[in-house]
Amino acid sequence: MRPGDRDAELHHLSGAAKIRRLFQQVPLFRYLVIGTWAGLLFLPFKSARASLLLFVAVAAGQILLHGVRATGRGEAWKKSDFRALLHRGVRSASPYARSSVLPVLLAVSLVIPFMVKDYYLDVLIMSGIYILLALGLNVIVGFTGLLNLGFAAFYAIGAYAYALLNTRMGIGFWPSLPLAALAASLAGLLLAVPALRLRGDYLAIVTLGFGEILRLVLNNWDSLTNGPNGVSGIAPPSLAGFPLGALQHYYYLVLVFVLLAIVLIRRVENSRIGRAWIAIRENEIAAASMGINTTRYKLLAFAVGTFWAGIAGTLFAAKMRFISPESFTFMESILILSMVILGGLGTLYGAVVGAFLLVILPELLRELQLYRMLILGVGLVLLMVFRPQGLLGKARGK
Image 1 (cartoon, rainbow, N blue to C red):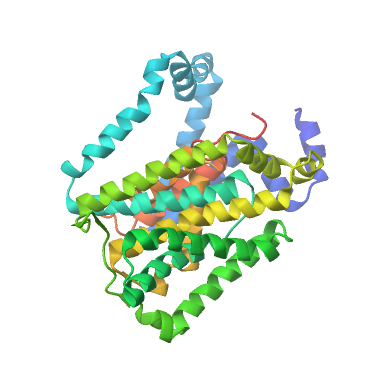
Image 2: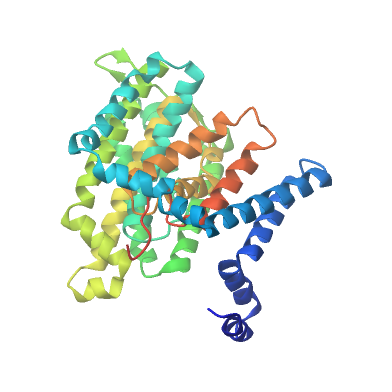
């Protein structure tokens, strides 16, 4: 586009649209904005001089990289960048090598308890529970396109169902597990029946409200849930009389459920049901015109997604042996949604990777107490700017 044409086009745009168009089409403006943003984020932690130096370094580094790409040598480098090399390497790899990736990961997962300390094993157990939550939410948000901002409510229903069945009625872990999962699934159906009359932001607000209402009910229904004091004395699971309370044993229990969820959801995704969900996500009107009962499949998506949330809640309650309403806040729902978005909406393994990263990375950065959330926030923003489809997601239309 010639400079005169660009100026004429910018003249007819609003202020925000002009800034967005400049950000996309003028590299120097984009580099200055990114450098300024990095410097302002760094300012509360260091002096103004350090922030200014960071601004200069970020902006100058981007300008230098742009100059390298503009040269003939840069064009050759650009054609053989890391992403293209990785893509060609994966495509040219033998089928045997590609098919052996998952078995290798599984083998590594099986020997991890013998290689890491109990603290890291505990973190891995929590990452497995969050993987189950991310997989369940991915069915609703990723496959079907229904934005749910109250998913932690179904997580809470599963946890409290097992806690109350165990402490009040003496029912063990294995009989309580399907009951808790069905309770969460039934709650998802009851919410979906009136909520699915809405779409988009309105549906998100309804699910958000449901999550907050449930948390307040758990916090104030003292006779049943013991209010803010929570439920304690929850029994750990056992198998054939052998207790599974040790971290090593519980790790394998969670791993089994994660593998089961991946296999089952993968099969559903490739079935007629999964294709119907994806059709509804892409264009609900077109899906209905092709004979798909959109209401039925939306209800099914809510039931399947919340079913896994109930299982995750049961595992969480059995591991912690104590639960309270503070474990199921709105921020928990946002965290689970961030895991799905980070990995890539609608991608099964993307949800797994996103959940794993958002649980593991804060622990790896724990030594950087003041900076770890800043680093994570900067990483997420950069990901949304440069790869909005997520780590493993595909861009629309590709």
